[in-house]
Amino acid sequence: MPSSRILAFSASLLLSAQFAASQESAAPEQTRTVAVDAGVPIHVVLDKRVSFTKTGQPLRGHISQPIYVYDQVAVPAGTTVLGKVAEVHPVAKRKRVDAILGGDFTPLCEATVEFDTLVFEDGRKVAIQSAGAARDSAVVRMAPSTQKGLWQQTKGAVRTAVLTQKQNLEDMIRKPNKMERLKNGLLAKLPYHPQVFDAGAQFVAELKTPIQVQVHAQPSTEAAKTEDLGAHPAADTVLHARLSSELSSATNQRGDPVEAVLTEPVYSADHHLLLPEGTRLLGSILVANPAKRLGQNGELRFTFKEVQLASGAKSPMRGQLTGADASKAVNVTIDEEGGAHATESKAKYLAPLAIVLLAQATGESDNDGVNGSSGGSVNNGVAGGGFGLMGRLLALSAGSRFVAYGIGYYGAARSIYSRFIARGHDVVFPRDTQIEITVGSR
Image 1 (cartoon, one colour):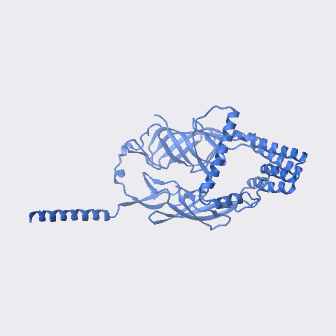
Image 2: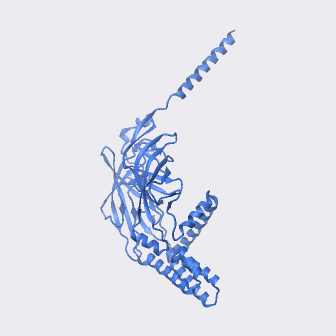
Image 3: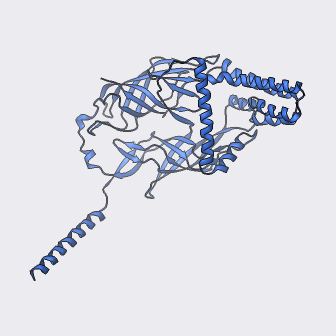
């Protein structure tokens, strides 16, 4: 029958189409091999808490920032990294003495780590050779300056501290592994405590040798217009780069050259490649003021003036620092002109004053005949500025106003010296520091 023949013919066409589609989907995906050069840093975040007091301790973490090659991701963020503790050595004597004066008698040491294997999401493993160290940093971005008086700044600092403590408390309650984090926090306050890399610890390690990785082929990118390479990006475009060498307000001088390398490609509005990964950004130091005594902090200001492609071709481009990874130990701020400053909260005036007032309150309480338990409670707060937890235990066990006075005023003197008399903090950006540069107008 004609109708049955038509139905049979249609069914055969449908089956043929489905078969062809299945064959296309079964076809292997096109890949190509790219090389990640030696010297490229990998940024690793540790997955689990690990002790580092002896060599050979295994480490497991993940890549926190993708690694690009020219215009394509070669190592995605989240890729697993395996390594070990390669070397352990004691800290500098000055740092050791400062820790002892603060009540920490642990024989402090520092560790150098090695990462030797990348494990991709599909199970592929790539052997690498890299060496690096822990780096405790956080992203700092430019904030508009506001002219406020000392009282307003102090109130703002106190309010920020209160909000931070509140957030820390909420995190402690809501985040997993509450007991483990509480235990780690208490152990860190002991006069003698284990030395560990906590989960979330950051590392930067440079590749010692190039590696070969497989990536998905992108024919459209390979056919990109070469005449667009080196073109000036639009104003206010943010470039992501890494410093090629260390910059410091203590050692650099005005006029010193500055070089950074793009870590991510830059595209135009219509997605034409303008600046591939590896493009060099060239500039110079404008201001370098080292830290000085009496708590004067350092300042560092630099700018970028041109870009250089891998071919050697250069073109002018003005760029300003608007963001950087900075050490959490030094409160770095970036002003509206791209200057980096080591600053301290105005609340620094409150700490020594609070310690002195607590010590005075302890003495007055003892003179008024307050019992030992109440005095011990105040001593506990006073000793925080002296010998930490050991000072608190000493004050509680002694129950003497003279001990409270001694620990309290020692803490106040140490706090005053470190904040107002000692040398301030320098602005230091180590080699491979990630920075953000905002492109100016032509």
